[in-house]
Image 1: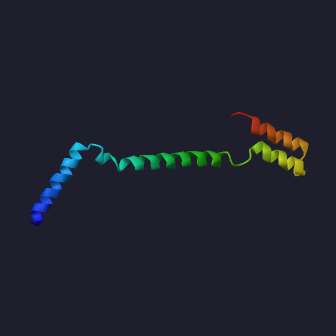
Image 2: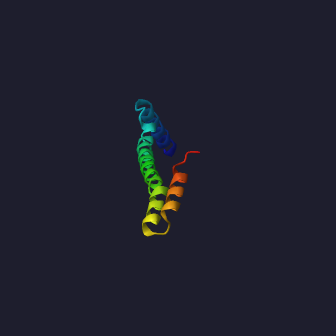
Image 3: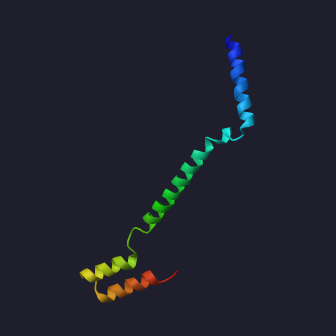
Length: 85
């Protein structure tokens, strides 16, 4: 009796898989959308992280404004920052 039920359930499952070809793909659909969300969040946060800090010129201007460096040193350092190697 148990083997008959096992055989019957196997036949029903096999028949279901053959007639409904979408079933094996069903678990992959939510995983795909979860992956898309993870990619989008990583892209946005990585972009914010890169743009988060002030530029070198902004830090230099703040130091000049606070009086930590004089005008000559400010201009020299700004020229170095703007120089393209």
